[in-house]
Image (tube, rainbow, N blue to C red; front, top):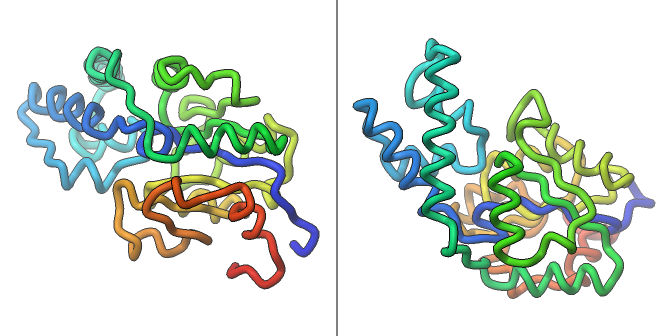
Length: 225
């Protein structure tokens, strides 16, 4: 779209705004280990950024009962929240970029596979809840990333066309979802290699290297599509 421009930035949460990966992995490892299933870090990274139903079914099989699914979900969430409470650390450059976006009047939203309770514990812990005009989270959509649904929902909540949005992600599934939504995407190599994130419009090692001008530049006619 030749008339597209930067109007909104949609933020993934885990691994982009907050350094929470270790706590998620430890919680999954505990809950699956209790059921005799070894959940390795490699397995975790392969599914990082995806919804809980995808992760649970990959570890315990698609034939898991609804009752057991709900129990596993509850145990994992309780374990994770217990671990992360009081240990929330922002990723380098994230809070500074969020502040800059506010100064420039760019709309922002959280678009995360995480449930609302997990989103709240992070943004309240970092005291940034007032910076976001909308939250779109995993339980509000039928399909998780790499489906574009959560990003499209976030754009609708902001009242912005998808083509005028930039997504900030660190997961392979998240980058794929952003591009399927017709959005620009900045990928941060916090959890995956540059090569695995190559479908993003811009790949950086840290958000400390990203300015609002860089995000706006993604919409230049000569920018790589």
